[in-house]
Length: 139
Image 1 (tube, rainbow, N blue to C red):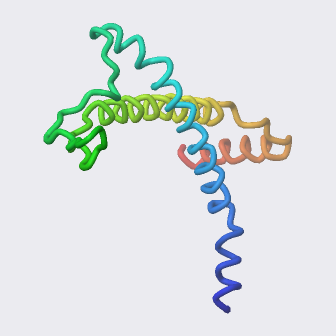
Image 2 (image 1 turned 180 degrees about the vertical axis):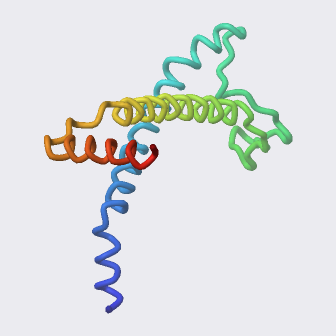
């Protein structure tokens, strides 16, 4: 099998297509989550801790060098506020995925617990005959 034929067989498999759809949906979900964190969750949280904007929190290691109103060297800083915001984003995404997976697992459990479809008459009769013969052989 040639390289291109092998690649085509791989790329058209259902799992690869499912993965591609998952990545695209995940990227869109990431944008929604970022907006949720930046625009909905962080403002009230910042308000609770004295109007602090998390994205502005940083530890300046070296101030910027400014001469004649021009920045010659930028400031060196650890932007821990951006890190905190990224952690909150991750926690929200992880929680949402947990809820999604949990729901899917419960739906699958309900499907598995559903009674089997009724057997046809021949299967019921054969099962009864098997059980009768089994009882007789035990006696």
